Length: 385
Image (cartoon, rainbow, N blue to C red; front, side, top):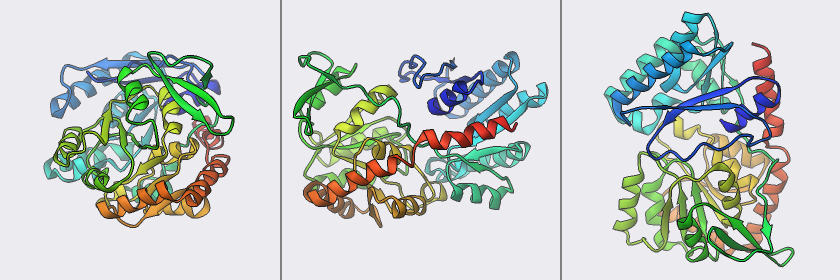
């Protein structure tokens, strides 16, 4: 969302992003993240989950949208589609739908029939009132048209090649500093992080090669397979994120006795994540195959690892396979059985020739698959409204 808002603001649009403030929310980043300023607001909600949360959030968002001055409102996924529809209808404003995923087929929705029924009703009722919108890949766009006869354009959330993390050399390792070796220049480089826990992890458990998973710790992301796989992997794993499968993931780590090998850290600011990712040796992008939302996914971290020059183990699903066929920067696996994951990770850890080739392909692919190219479609989309 920061990339979208910043790009629009840089092209003369006045942008405001409205979200929800949760108890675990990290502080809002101070714009300009990408040399463009936009307004940010979080709504306070008493309820933090369940039907009462969605009811409270939707009411507060509707009231806020009725009081603001704007020309176009964009609903991000189904959980904001109703208040945007109602407010823009009432005020005769334009509306846009941004589908980050196929919401009604997410595992946490699909496996709860009554919850799925409610969201499908919302989808059928509200989405036809959105005449324009976009989603993250062509497979999802085709699915929306097949099931709902809604035409969505495709705008992928690719990483920016600008404003890469700044290395801060010639300082001593103090509180908030992490040492990394610059293999090319043989220099000692220090990266500053605000989380003392993360600094301790990087300076101790992750001083050598480590694996990173960054993103939501949610149902369907393969943690039931990834955690047991780590028994046989010759490197530690750092999970940076939170989500609705966090408690279960923690329990799996304890059940397999991996407390000194698999570590979970809460989300960190985007600017710090851009510093952290290149320190990792391998990235992880896996999903369960059940459900079209997972099968046709195109995760942000898939491209973030690429931009950071970090080879990754990735599921061989349609969108990933299509991209890797043209830009072979990832090692694809045909299933997410623990033994398959472990074998792929150990392969990247031990095969320097393969690793270096994938790393070089990351650099090549970033020159093509980047936000500076993709954002042109975003600007053209909003300019046509």
